[in-house]
Image 1 (spheres, one colour):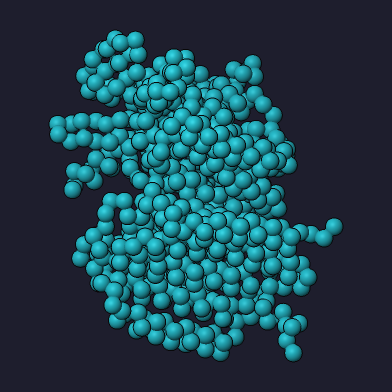
Image 2 (spheres, one colour):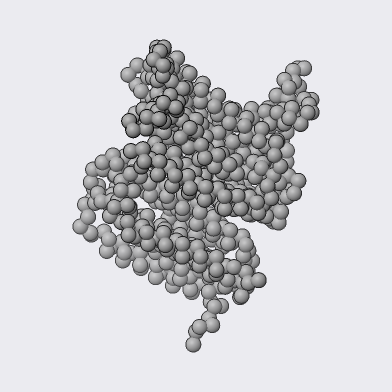
Length: 100
Length: 164
Length: 376
């Protein structure tokens, strides 16, 4: 059994990779996918703690995180579809109408 | 070094590789498939951590339904314009993420959590234990989540409807 | 330790052997059976040393040779890696599902008790649904990588159909899970060995006298769930009447139009393996799996009191044979269905899945819950 720290470091690395994706990629769908990566890194941390502390609460919380992530992915993709219909582009840089 | 430790190292290397592929590949469909692989590997890690129910839900819901939705949207929108990749941006972004990962890892490594796991009973992480917690201690969040999913369905239909 | 791994490897080999062979034989039954139904002779030209075996040589020898020696190409603008990956995923998910389906009770060799199931997971049936939801990727990726509008259309239709009927399939099984109280398939199969009169409380005297002598098979306890599951499983495997994604006369073979040779053989074999898997699930959940009526571990115990004792190996052999026969029966039923009914239009498929099967499955869950509470 590997020590808990290894799981936490793995979670931190995946979180950081997801953050790169959100900040740097210029395709809305890949940004949404990076957000899913971030959520999964958090799930991994929860489950690791749940195992090492012997409590079921971590797993229940992960269950809810998954449900919320599903709802968020659905709405995010619906927004992407309606934005694409208007602007014909998926580049977040071009969606600057609200900028002053 | 027992078998589970070797498995953990192999899976974590593959997981980091596929996450990097999600973020760095040019073709969006390839990115989506790399994410499916990453989700499946995380599900394997869940099962190794004595959470088989959450692991199979991860495959069912995340890798099996949400990612299919992503692939549908990618195929319908079919974006052909290649996205620009400014090098300065990517350099800065990677540096920031590296700093974030390093600080998180440093913060998390000295926690007071026990280094070795508590001995797991047979029913830890099984469907019956998860269901018992879900329907007794966490019944209010459960009901609210069902309303949330209903709101998400209605919202998605309204947003994505084509104006007649 | 090594012996344990060896036993699992032998079981896995046996299961794969049976599924793949059955998939091949089903190809033959389909060609010859369809010929009989349509009052024609069918393929009978290929022969080895004069033996044509009613089309057996044609389907099992000539066809695979033909497929494997055809040119293997990738469409010019298509994605090479994905084009090769798609049939692998389709075949993989069809075969791997059989790991949790029990094909017998236990085999006692000396002091070693071997559970006749490749993997005894405590999440049992959820594993089947998870692998089924991964099966959508074979279609989606195959359709996309072919760079062909007809292929994409067929693939999108196919995957939308599959994910719609996954919901109906999952919900229709909930009734069985409520009755037997477990997710593990081996426990569900074992639970179907009790007689109905042993499951009912004392207060249900009327029910006990009329149907109490039946074994507690899923079909007697949940008939509506069986119909829903059968429909949903046939829709999942994209067989007629639900085969518009592959529509041979409408969509030019839909999502596998750009596949030839070995890759098409993999799609084809994957489809027949899915038929075997659907049949395996139906027998395990609704028809007692490996149960022979009134056969317990030591012999027959008939409800009218008579007992016939049998040695352990005979009991195990009978149970495995019963499982195989039931699976073959359901495969034959699906093939019969294919050649008897026309195919649904796509909007009819979607309406059936969401507006008819889903509410009926939910109704089934509610009625099952009421009956279980009333009988306690």
